[in-house]
Amino acid sequence: MTSTSSTRKVAASGDSGEFERQRIPANKQLSGTYFLGAYAGEHVAGTEFVIGASLVALGVSTSDLIWGLLIGNLFAVLSWAWVCSPIATRSRMTIYWYLERLAGKHFSTVYNLLNGLIFAVVSGAMVTVSASAFRVMTDIPPQTAWYPQSLSFVALALFVGAITVWMTIKGFKLIANFSTVCSPWMATMFLASGIVTVPVLLHTGQLDGITSLGGVLDTFVWTGTTPDGAAGISVWVIAAWAWGANLPMHLGMSDMSILRFARKSSYGYFSAAGMYIGHFMAWICAGLMGATAALLAKSSLVEMDPGGVAFRILGAMGLIAVVVAGWTTSIPSLYRAGLAFQAVFDRFSRVQVTVATGAVTTVIACFPFVFTQWLNVLSYFIMLIAPVGAIIAAEHFLLPRLGIRPFWREQQGRNSNLPAFAAWGLGIAVGIMLLSLNAIHLFALFIPVWLVSFLGYPLMCRLAGAARGNDANNPYEAAYGPVLERGSTEAPPAGYQPVNRRSPWYAIAVICLVTILGLAAWGGTTNNAVAHLDTFQSLIVLPTLLYFIAATAWMKGRRKPRAREAHAAPHLAKQTR
Image (cartoon, rainbow, N blue to C red):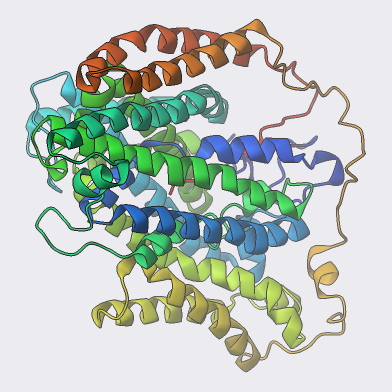
């Protein structure tokens, strides 16, 4: 596939094979199980290793972390359910097509360039995470500065980057299958790391006279102070970070491209599976793992990378976990970066653009800023992309209330939507001003930026002459077309075969995951939790190998192919936090 319209879309298709510039018809809309599974597996990846450890280093207290994550992740779920999902299921459009109709080709081109840059940096950073696991098997020292401190690490990053590019150009099917197999194991390994480290921390606390779990966590993990003794971040900053970490997907509207396949708008609530598995459980477990590894190594967490942390707690399987976690983010991120850039440079094929983008991401991977500055880098990207989602939300929710139908620019035949450009620039300008005045924490900066663009865009539209039209009494049908709903009692499409969960391979895979968790919990019954850690690392090798064999075998036969019917929509390449 070489055209812009055929390469950017990886969702389910009809006879033409694509729905990039078509609304999703009723018979292609999908049930909630697809979205529940997609979100559950989407948010356990390489970023969790970095973010979980970073929150420890930022000096948050235990209670502030737990409450902050509970509140922030709730706001993220509501952003999907109340903002992104209603727009996606009413318009049934990708964000790319929606933006082009809203603001014109020039606006969508700028957005694609920025979107591609963000995903390229995310991909490069996660290549660095994967390389940190390979580093442990060599004599290369940990790379915790923003620049490479070893030529050997540069060579290693180039090697891992080359593998990443190769896997990406193999296409979406390989990416989806890879993530389907790896995601359940990754979630299990995060949970197991948290379970196995708690007895080690309790044992260490007893040596210092600390007997309660809360006291141990406050003393050794989330202490409320940074490593240099400064006061840590507050519960509200943690909540803002948890809410904004995935802003490009929910309030930034990128997940419109996935949720347009949802039969009901309420499926946006299924994002809770990803938030509370990935951005609650995984972040907490990654923090436990990082603090315990640093304690056992008698080192500071800021001097360790994900490879070193995972190897100390999970052994060789920890290295595999870091490699897999990095790849499950870097590969789909590079895939989406290639698609975004190819939408601009459409005279080149997807493979050509992906290879060129991959070369850039591999160079980025040689600079391990991810271990020290990742949360800040993501926050700047979030600030840049937040106004775009705000403009889409205002177009859908606010303009009709002012008597202006969505896509008024298209209706009036204007080449560009100047109010959209102005609202984007205004939001970023406000963010820069607040940042320069030190008036708000960087992690919460997206909130005023989004609100300014959300409220400023409709006012600028009125000033630009976006007058009330004759169809303003029914603005959504005039702009989007009629509602394309499918009844919940309708039969599945012809040729559909449900996922086979009665397969013996499926049962074996589940048993292996349960076994890993059981082996982790066993440490709580032993007298020497530290010694059990070494035993645990050896015992999980066999169930891990059996899991990958069984999961791969099950995946290959899990569903019979359907004639002219792809079911890949909710398994789009993972959106990155």
